[in-house]
Image (cartoon, rainbow, N blue to C red; front, side, top):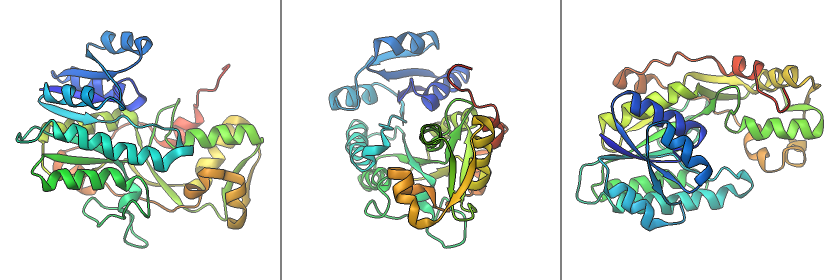
Length: 298
């Protein structure tokens, strides 16, 4: 296949590009930065100049390929709601280039969208919350609209995707801890965040675009739920900072925009994904990657 990949130079995207090429596929990677273009070319991908703001570049990239994997997302979480609405627009633009074909579009969402059964891990077939509850649901709402038009769209829901350099929402959390000089969790810290190693996630995206199952939902989850207290304690050991609990009422002032996530219990299952795709994650755990976290100056 010839696959158009947005976010091709990002942490997950660059791993997806390498996995696709290693499996014999050809990659057309969206890139706006000349600096990052060299790395994309070195990986063996073809460069497609453009950006998320340039819908013509999105449509032209999608139109000339056999499938699309959409990974790009603005990770400035301080404007999270606006970024999610931007993603709705991007997905609509990508889908418009695939109208009347059966070529697959694989979009990205988050596992918390399907945490809709109290006390149970999110499952692929669960009902989802709306974007009025969780802004990231905008991506899945856009995908559902495309599916209703007959476009072959499927969804990969991400947990905290990690390696020793980045770990999803945990990365800005680490920056906050370093700035404040202490590592903090809410209450007993028993709320859980799911996780997966970046190379396992990359392999899953390839399996999904190869399968091209319309309207399917997949969970890129290796560990169903790691207690936030264990996450924060591992960070504290690596940064050599004190670890403590704060009450829920102090969370907004302490965490700022991250407070919407800090106390969430959001375990997620990937049992169905593993069964239908034969996907078996083998990478290191989240805690082991945090214990070998790469720090500036080290």
